[in-house]
Length: 295
Image (cartoon, rainbow, N blue to C red; front, top):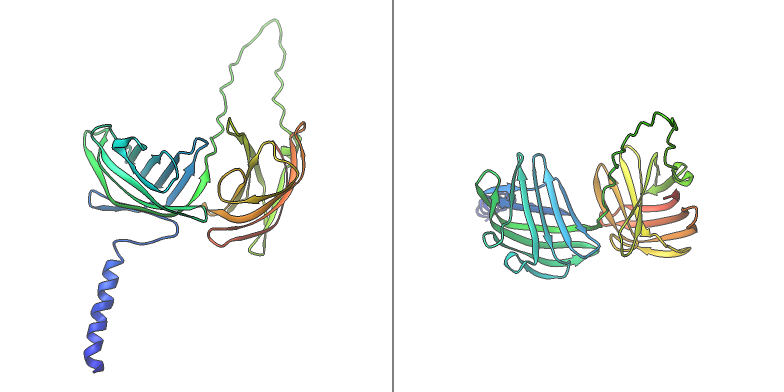
């Protein structure tokens, strides 16, 4: 009896092993089949903007994908109904984009759980700058942490004017002393995290917020709160008015739950201090967090 069962078990094991080589479920995960080739990006993100639009991006090496929906509500978003704003894919400097009336496709958001989003998608006939087209099939994204959009700070080019009559030196713009002396420390799974690079980025128009960022060579913590935040306790999540993330080797995880306590906030000097703790989607426990910042 045992001799008869053993070959059968071997066949079953072989069957399952062959199936798992095509699709691999990661947490989080994003993948699709592009013209018969599996695309599985190393970096994948779900970013929500102030107007409620959602952008999902993924990139690996010389390939990148990006597509946008009009909201994060569960349901189906179709290109022909303009519920999907743009779809693009870039490979070796050749860009493929969706065209009205030509490209077909849809995105289905199936689940939002613990501030993580899941769904599936397909796109047909994206047009490339090389005159060719490509299609995405069997695409899916699984529990991508939802992050707030924070615009990149771009340095303005300074116009140099030489005045022969008046040789006055222009003063450098003042940097908030509280930002120059900023600090942030925390315990990560019981180990101390000390940061040496600090930044504060105001963003948003209708509901302006501040993102404070602190990092060292391997780790990074970000915390977002309204620019008019008041002294007291506030609940932390992975996106929204009060949110936080922790990254290790560029692998970012959003907060599932936590608390931000503002102990002081001077809106005139733009100096702020407080404490925080949170748990991330990947199970990282951040405790005993303290910060003193300027913006």
